[in-house]
Amino acid sequence: MLKVWSLGLFGTLIALVLFQSTNSLKVLGISSCYTGHVMPHSGIFRALVNRGHNVDLLMGGDCCETKMAKVFPNASSCNSVTIYGSHEIVANNQIEGLFSVRETFAENGTGVAFRETNKFLRENSDYDVIMTDFIILGAHIAAELTDVPIVAMYLGPFAFPLEGEEMIPLRSVFLPGLPTFLVEFIEIVGVLIYQLVNSEKVYEMVNDINSEFNMEPKLRNAGIRFFLPFVYYYYFANLIHMGPPDLFLSSLDFMKHKNNFHHVGYIPDEVCFQPLSAEVQDFIAKAEKPIVYMSLGTVFQMELSKLQNILEELASQTTYSIIWSASDLHHKQLKAFNVKGPNFLLVNKIAQLSLLMDGRTKVFITHAGANSLQEGIYSETPMLVFPGFGDQPFNAHQLVEHNLALPLVELSFAEISRKMELILSPEQNAQIRDSLKKSKNIMTSLGGFEKAAEIVEQVERGEIKVVDPPRLVDVAEMLYFMLYLFLGVLTSTVVLFFMGLYYCCCRKRTAKKENLN
View 1: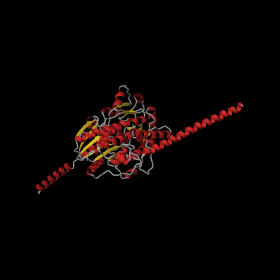
View 2 (view 1 turned 135 degrees about the horizontal axis):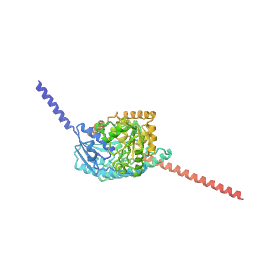
View 3 (view 1 turned 30 degrees about the vertical axis):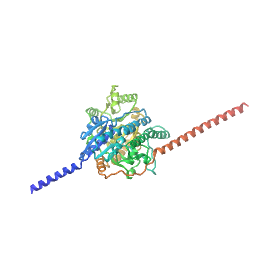
View 4 (view 1 turned 180 degrees about the horizontal axis):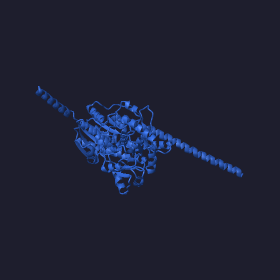
């Protein structure tokens, strides 16, 4: 009897192993090398491996060696190619940053990414499913040339209203302190700059690719050319949407509509909690002031003179214990000034979520990048926001309007100090922490990396297909109308002003002549 039972158990184990091996997928993950993209992508890759799948990587720049080896060492293979560089955007203001993203989304993200991905897939075609980074639309279109199921991943806002819904501000800039009417005008101009400089270029490049490779011209047939590449995924691709939906969507009702976005929120796994360096741990242990952590991201670059000013101010202040994690380029430049202080630490690599989860970290000064935003919410850390470009102004607006953060009008210690007093006041701090908890509860209820991996499996099995979603408002067309209306009103006002001025001058001249007579 024991022998029969043992043979039965052995047979069951063999069957389970064979079942797992036959259901193991070969996945190709394609990503840029930006930290805000690598971190969420690697979490999904880890979840796929934990579910018994094999993941190959196609990464931009030297990402396999510099980043993926640390956060996803169990890739079956990792190929670093020029699919997409880690493009650093140098801009003195947010509008200038809008001009700079053309290289991010169009030249690199569409043109270069398509050529390199298409070349790779011609030589490596035995994949069951492909997962792409939303920023690399060209890679997604190259994958469409194969018969392999595809799913994209996006961490960031998608606040476009459906036809018939109320329009919300698109927040292309974040300029607290300026008059509302002026900010609204600059926002319209900013959105139109993005449309003309970037979206129209992506539209042309996609159509050229479609024509050259005899692909269906989806954008042209659908008459869609606004806010690419984001809107492309809404209409034509399955997309895993990460992050806090209460901030990233125009409303939570968006999740009720049948469309191609699959919301998974954010739940970090153990790899997200990297150990803090000995240097950082020692600084925290010796800190006698409230700890403030500042990170302005790895992409957006500021003028060196401005950075030097804030460096000297932070290093010499005695009110807080400040840790500044600067990008590699900024860190190298700032280190050269050799500015130090007992209440200041400058680093260029840090286990951000681990630091934020430390109860001694009281405030997070952030550029409002999507990955930093979701980590700030998950750790329930009150934030001060100073955004750069792209989705960051919108994210900053949402954080402030949802009472999760306070705005910085400028990056100076005087401004930081003013806002620190407000954010650490008992009443304000309690309100912000309560709002953070509510947002976190929504975000963590959606399944995180595990849910994303499940969606990848469902896409591969054909259980999730691309659907025809409700139409979006053509935001660009509407904003063109608003701009023309605004300029018309402005022109009329100027004309009326000068007509009134001319009339007054004429009356005075006439009155003067009458007096002389």
